[in-house]
Amino acid sequence: MPCARHRRAGLGARGVNAPGLVDLQTRFQAFILQEAESPPAGLQAVGATVYSEAYVLRLTEALANDYPVLQQLLGETGFAGMARTYALASPSRHFSVRWFGQHLARYLRTTSPYAAEPYLGELAAFEWLMGEAFDAANAPTIGAEQLGAIPAADWPDLTMAFHPSLRRLDVQHDVLAIWQSRGSELATDPQGASRLPMHVAVWRRGLEVYFRPLVPGEALSLDALLDGETFAAACEQLAADVSSGDDPAIRIVGWLRQWLADGLIAGLR
View 1 (tube, rainbow, N blue to C red):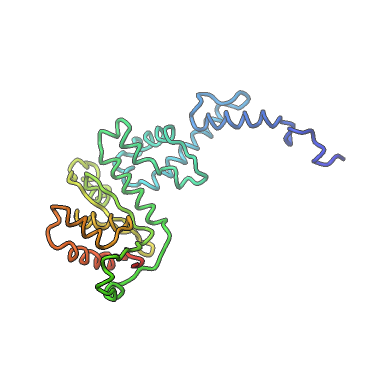
View 2: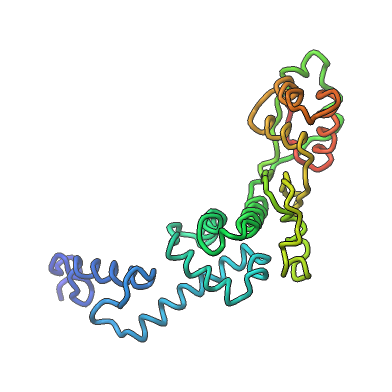
């Protein structure tokens, strides 16, 4: 009896030519991704369509898991339609479905009819950051005693390391109120949400994801320190902001204490 290595080159277990199999798989994938209107010849249309619909349904479920409040706003039917068009515009390219929705906020901001309601893209960006914060690596954080131990001469050159889960977002609508309301009246009528600019921090402590709004000066200083700027440079940026008000060093130290209490700072350098 001939062994497997004596099979004719280019044939699979049932004698299917390898290049032909690759072509069949490519055309079937195009149908599943709705890049082709009909399945490859030789495949039953009904079975292939069921497979295609199941694939889209799985992607829709993944998006609903990442964007639960967005789904509530759009409704199940509206969300499913959005998910289908998003899958066509931004097909999954990652081996894990976890990353399928990473471009949804941009899609909503730039695609009709969703772009006409800017809060949708902002809410999507917020919900995605919550997922990122939950999945982020862990790291120990420091307390107020480490801050108090810094010599005065070292403060100007001080830089900070932040918890890996910390994320920042700037929006034009009160996405926090929309998200917190869930299925309430505000969630069904987000036009009532504040249109004032909002600066948001998102992070994780333990297994819980937290978020809160930041005042403009706090957001400016946090962004500077996240970018690796020194304490002195952050003070200079805050001083240049005409809306900052009081002594910038005093204000930033006050925010530092809050960040320590929130568990945002992993180290001082």
